[in-house]
Image 1 (tube, rainbow, N blue to C red):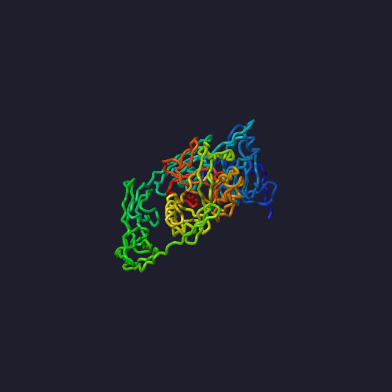
Image 2 (cartoon, helix red, strand yellow):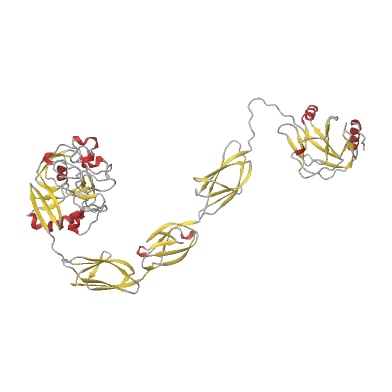
Length: 618
């Protein structure tokens, strides 16, 4: 069927006629960003045919009214087009009226936008709202032509950084419901201008919430939030050095001071062989700096009977003298205990005894009489060898003489101030141990071995100056019949240094026997972090080993400043609380192994690098 084609003039007359009528405005279909609206009118045009086309199409007519000056409207007519979303086409466009643009569009389009050039797109019809066919729609459009600006352009800032400083530094920061990362108490992010909500929280602190307005385009904005603590410092104390546990976590023993958050706690005290003590405690702000005494654990007992033949032997329970045999102990805390029985002339009886609840343990029996130690002494070329219970040690004769003590020239820039001033010292004859006292010799005399680096021919260590005196006293008693009036002692500082330098045979070495430390000493660069068997490095001029390195060697003297005056057989200061040691050790730098280097400590100090060497005095 053939359709009649309407002329363009007729079409315009029909449209003008429709607009000139008194038409009722219906409800707006959708508001757009510039507050213009697309308005639907009741009256219909009927069916129209497209100009120069002979097929009829259902369509709607959109009339745009343009605001602005005549030149702006002319520019707008050149720029403005209608964009129909995915269809990207307009059925027809009319530009006859000075301040209007007419668009004829298919009623099937669902998205309509005004396109007035780059960066200027306004939505007229929202997605999902369809036009009715053969209906007129009108809208108002205000067009502002692009302003030409010469020179650099400054972007409009619509966002800025916000930094939130929080206390405590591990607090959790949320802004607008989003979690921000906190680093060293500062959280930061870029935010759009406007009002934002924040929340700051941390364990044992009251949370803080609020709002902040971001609106400064020039400067980073900051906010400080300091949470109010919900904890206080308390001291928990219990007798018997029992362990203190709070909500299943160990806090300390005997006493603990720290922070606890407000709320209820289960506090326990624990001790081996005891029933745990327990208390429920609620901590509040009123408990700040309070000391809370906790219930002590209740001991669980067994009993112990100690009896020996002969009677009247000393009983030691866990190292404490608790009486003489025979003895019954009715309340001994359950668990393992070390029981020792000692009596002069008899071997010590030592055992570990387990005490059970409500049970009696028995320790005792006949003590074994001690055999007298085997001691011998021989002499050769001025040197003397002594044997105690199968362990021999040699004392090297040192001919007396005069030497310069302290920071002599070969010590160079390594010398310390306490090695000065140098001074002349004259010594009488004496003998000194060829080796450092070994663990085997200590065991033969003392019956134990306190050393950390075990080995019978390694030097004994972890012995104090006081321990050395006990050893020497016992050694002198054991060998009294062999000594002929002589006695063992620790060397004086002067005797030690004279022997280390090589006595009258001295070659003036920096270390004991050489200027090359590796040939005569075990020290940090070659020891492998351990002591070594004595006598495995080269000796010095007198045939003495390890006077540099291996272990420090206690001397008899108190520590003090040197005197400039000449001295004969000096014994060191007459007063002072520290004792000298010499020679360097397995984990020392070379400069501390020099023959003139000095160091000191209290006479009760024990260290896994502290040993000693004997002298034999006429």
